[in-house]
Every structure is written in structure tokens, then in C-alpha cells.
Length: 247
Image (cartoon, rainbow, N blue to C red):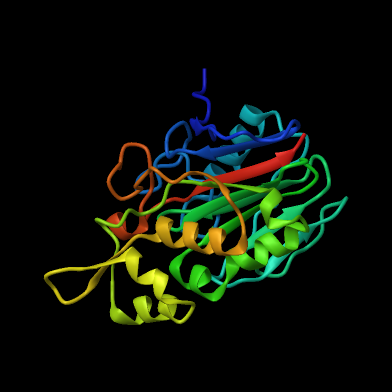
């Protein structure tokens, strides 16, 4: 009997009819270094393995439609899913108001952010690496959701933690351009560089928008190789997926 895909189910007060999940690296068929539940088709894994992993994911979540997989480019563009599948330009966030359409982002250290309006009418997902986060991908995603930010819930998934995420001064400066509060998310290290708290920066950005209901954000992908892929730790690796949809 094939092992089913392993998941984290977000612990947050999602509105009725809104479902969400985050995949772990276990429960699939991919061989090392993509072992075993790699969801990404662009990392060098065998296409047949990715197809089977995605099939298992759909089965595990009882999805009526397959997720809409984005071509992510560390930008701020938001794709909007309508009533029928359509080709999409590269994007790093996705929203929908259509039941059954599944928003998904892929990560392996970058921060996945799942979003839902309190009334359950709109959902979305954002891929927030440092470049996209500094450029405004969360602001763009919340805006595209079409709800008052005070009526938006956010869930922050697994990402690289501050103890493992060393960056240069250019990264810190990119965030400080938005305001001095970002300095609190950077700690100097003995190498003259900075330890960056990506999750704290995302919380700052969401709170500045007026989003107050923020959950999750307690996992470090780098520190937990048994459960999570990490590009910075491993170089070649698979990708996990954060999904949200209206049932």
C-alpha cells in the first residue's frame, strides 16, 4: 500500500469552507536528493515521480481540481484564478474567489503565506523569499484578495529560521527602505554579516497593512531535515507546497 502524503494542517480559525495544508518531504516516491515528496517540476527530479507525488497530494486532500502550479520568480505579481483553468504568467502569489480552485506556492526555505478573508469569500497564497518580501509581494497579495486587511487571516508556514539565514548588508538595507522597524529582524554576527528573521519581517509587513490575525511561523526548514526540504542546507532539493482553497 503506497504511503500517503504527509502534511501539516494549519491551526488557525479558518472560515467555514476554507481548507489549507502544507506538505512535508515524506510520503512520496522521489529518489534522493528529492526524497521523497517533492512537488516541484523544475528542480531536476524525474517527471514521473513529480506527477505521482502531485497525484497523491490530490488524493490525500480529496481535491476536485488539481492545484494551479505557478512559475515563481521572486517577484510581486499576483495570479487571479477564475472559474476555469487558464495559462498563467510567472507569479509569486495567487488568489481566488472560486470554489474548487486551489492556490498553491512551492518553497524550500522561502516563507509560504496563506491568506483568507474572514467571510471565506476569498483565499490566496504568497511565496515570500526575501526579494519578494522586500519588494511587496504580501502587500500585493492582500490587495488582490479584495478584503479589508482587518478582515484577513494569515498563516505563516515553515521557512528558514534566523539562526540559519545569514545575509549581507544589501538585504538589510532593502528592508530598511520601508522603515526603521525592520532593523529588529536583523542580528549582527561575528562574520560582519546579519542573521535575518524572515518570519518576523513578514509579520511586520502584514501588521503594517492592518492584518492582525496572524498564525503559524514556528518552524525552521533548515533545522529539521527529517521533515523539510531546505535549499540553503542541501543545495539540490525538492520543494514543499502550501495550499489553500474554498471547498
